[in-house]
Image (cartoon, rainbow, N blue to C red; front, side, top):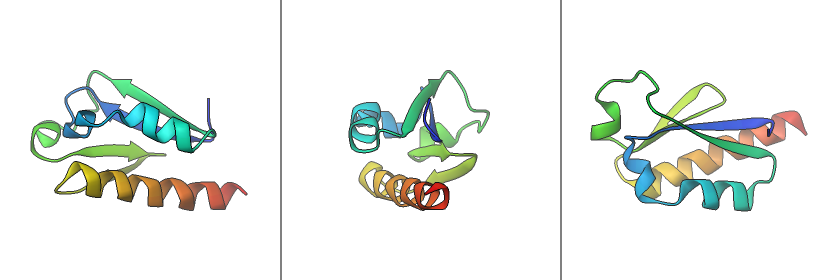
Length: 81
């Protein structure tokens, strides 16, 4: 498992992208974990979101959310470097 964990709810709109392939392909020290539910009821149906090392990341569009996820990943990786 990576030093950075990205958790994705199965119902999250971010799943319209192949988030595992995108993130794990670019960042080998990152693990993407899909869960049935992350207990943010209703959020997954309204906004694309993910949790990066415990921090909730969300945006209005999947592309914007992906970019925010990448920024948070890079900040986390810089912290561990």
